[in-house]
Picture 1 (spheres, one colour):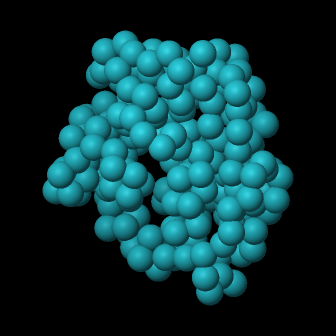
Picture 2: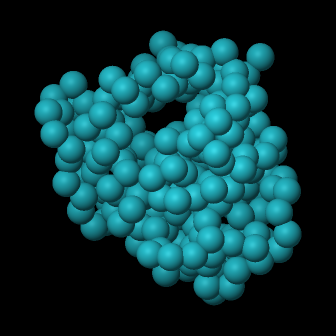
Amino acid sequence: MNVFEREAERYERWFENHPQAYQSELAAVRAALPESGRGVEIGTGTGRFSIPFGITDGVEPAAAMRRIAQQHGLNVLDAKAEALPFLDCTFDFALMVTTICFVDDAEQACRETWRILKPGGRLVIGLVDADSELGRQYEARKSESPFYRDARFFSVSETIRLLDDTGFCNFRCSQTLFQGLEKMDAPEPVRKGFGEGGFVAIAGKRP
């Protein structure tokens, strides 16, 4: 059984136990998203990132997570990132947050996202940067986590190369989480670029 089926409640508790980190990640994603347009989240989970940004469409293969998102009023379909059930050129932007590390084929997932975006549309990928201190901690301890045990962490540089190979361009990044989660007593600032923060939102444009 998919770990996200078994551990949906544990997944939700992470956000409840780390509200400052969650708010920091939301701020970094917000800085990378367009101000308007129809969006879709790929790997919606329980809706923790769709809801704050007014995204109502998404895909999520884990039924337990999907049910929670649907209870929040989201239109979440049972599908994977590599085979999106949407027509070409449907959305103005797409969001993936801590999703790319779990997909079976990241390149195919990016191609599918390209397909469903309108020309000029934007893909925003939020991830824990494998080259950051936080990323190195996650990698070192991933065998202890039911969620990250089989994850494949990407660096920002790797992700940008992947997006560039798919045809995306005009990349920009926003970063946050500059200290250990246990030290946080307030949301962290968001800065442009990458290389310092553990969490980075990467935006790429479909020409």
